[in-house]
Image 1: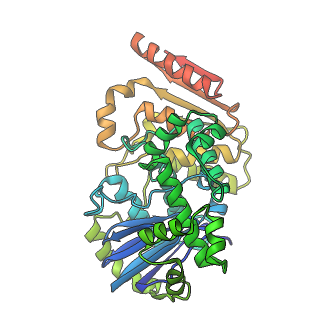
Image 2 (image 1 turned 135 degrees about the vertical axis):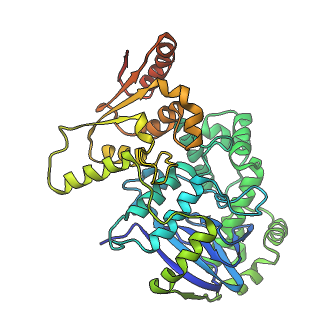
Image 3 (image 1 turned 120 degrees about the vertical axis):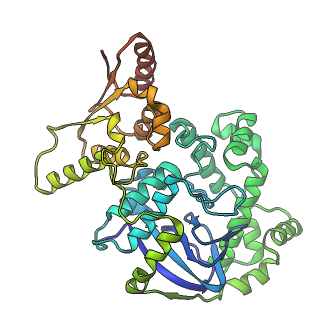
Length: 438
């Protein structure tokens, strides 16, 4: 059977420069320190840190001490059957690292994600097209570790309209890198003002429009040096440089050598890595978990249990189209104290995906009384009602919502006014069956 998410563990000294048009790759350093070169950027990745390599990105990794690294490959095309946004998203390479790059994050969200990565190694049913741990990894990737997240909040996602506009702009730039691209021309194509486009790039990429274009051109040049036999002159033209000397100067500043030296150095490079057996890795896992403070048992939640029940019923051939799947906000919290408490959105995310995939009827119950428990929700990393409505639900705005209904449960006049605001927002997103219940 086809696998969407697969993993292996390397004892690594160095790898050849590689690029994948198929896989999104995660590198979790379990022991030692690794240096990674992704495009024009260099990263020092230490124990307990994870690096994300987007598709179409060249990456070279090396270690002088024989680091142990878990490699997770996600087949984006296959995974996008259930996670369609995987085709659109650009992930941050330094997702699980502090701003000063000094150490790994220790937040519960990141600990859960890294625990899922380790647990994938010892998955009971590795031949499954999508394992339980793979499910969690994909869900959390899409929910938390994408460049489209607002950097100021845990769950504040960019609006669907803004996201699609940015993707259209990036696709346009990729298709016209060989042309003379200007801020005004690109803004006109996107039907926005040059000022808006400039602000958008600084907000998302933390760079100017010109700097982003230059980075994309140099990375395309590097890819062509590695994958093709084009001459340097042909590569210069393909990447949109009009001046040969300017190209050589920019390339040397980015990569520390001339294009010809780069090609001779990296194109024939070989991989020096030993793949560890599952048995050898299992012996090391307790040490890794203890060192990084990771969980041995998988994530769990009341909502995810509902997903598993639906899957079992469908496997038995039961007709689920007559069911109304009901979700209450309170179900985002766990009831048992002996299970892992910090549940974010992944249980609900899984349920929504299942409902969309099989066109089930969904009723969402949102008790506004939960607003008073915002601090409690933050403490156990549950979702607030604002997050619940504006991102968990509306990330699926591309799908028909005619079979979805929302019930906003209120207890007083103030909550009625708040519910009306939420109701108007949902109606604007295409969910026409929205009730306010007292």
